[in-house]
Image (cartoon, rainbow, N blue to C red; front, top):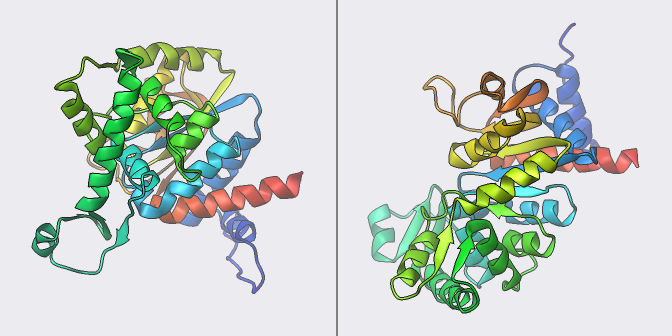
Length: 308
């Protein structure tokens, strides 16, 4: 089959562009189109539970409203997030902000109390707001419960957050569970440890596995949207090994496979571990999540709306 050259027109929609990628069918364009097609199918399949993993600085990188929309639209059924993305969601929910980096020297930023994430800045004042509010929420939850799983803790936090753009709050309102196996490795985890110095409050990470395994066993099919690599990707894959693996998945990551990292491993490798089923629909795209995922989700929405 020959490669079709990509045509650009003045009035084309994002779905038209992705269709052009699909007709080309090669290199990054072909992979992006395949990921879009799989995402569209996952969203439209009523028998499929869709898991989403959030690794890397996606929330400070501008993805917050997209994740929240997917929850509110019923396009995702479960989230596995890094502790950092949850922290940064709550920073904004509590009135803090993220700022575009203006090229200052990092030692100068340190003197000004500003932390840098690539070209994103966060000020110490924004984290001070976060620390005050999350401690207040911890106190409210601990007054009612002495032991709680991570997923239950995040659900209770979400119910107490008044911000319609917060994905943590949206997940709680829509009964979409959030799992965060690396929660302690974040500013929120640090505040939880500080809180526990003078409170009898136990957060049980193992308890999450009971609930998660029930979801996996109760699902007819499971699909996954893997944004970034690392722990969140592995937790999503490994949670499905108990039932033979994922039925469909897309991953977008900047990680490369040569070093043997899980983050850079193509999804096909997961078949050897029974983390993805043989015959499953898979697409691995190497690229920036904050560029590629908004494009394919916008195109998927257009395809879905035009099929109604």
